Amino acid sequence: MTAAATPAIHIRIVDWDSAAAELMAVRVAVFVVEQGVPPELEQDEHDATALHLQATTTDGRTIGTARLLEDGHIGRVAVMPDWRGLGLGTRLLARLIDVAQERGLDGVFLHAQCSAESFYERLGFVAEGEVFDDAGIDHRCMRRPVSL
Image 1 (cartoon, rainbow, N blue to C red):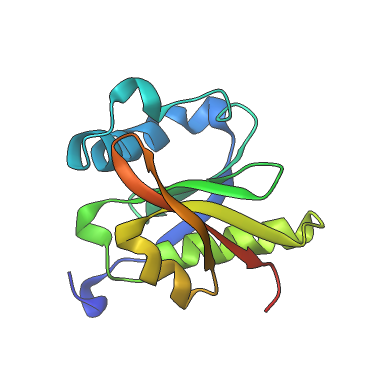
Image 2 (cartoon, rainbow, N blue to C red):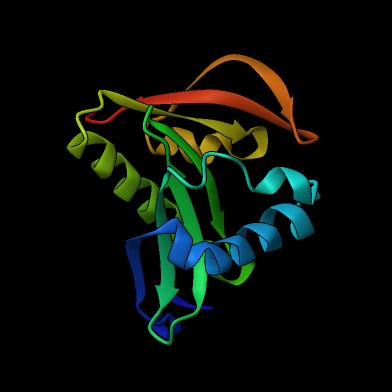
């Protein structure tokens, strides 16, 4: 899809109870189907209390999601394959960083898939610690202050 043909994308904070089906559809497509994460690991006890973002097209299709936990942990960042490369992941992260700052947090952190480390580095995240396995995928902790 080219930028000229890209419809407007809306990102909004949503309530888990009302948007879980749409958010999980994206997460299952990306993490379970595409990346092979066991389905029983994709939803966890944090979903009910996390702040969730939902990215939708103007016609209402959910194409991306991300969440923020109270301690500043960003996770479950997922964009549907056809919508990658258009800056949506960057927009989702920027919004979560803004929310974290509004909530008075000094910084945010995430467990980045090693294959995506350079993406997060471009957004100001710094890797720390050793590589670890999460659901069969190599990850690394990365941190970023809310204001650079």
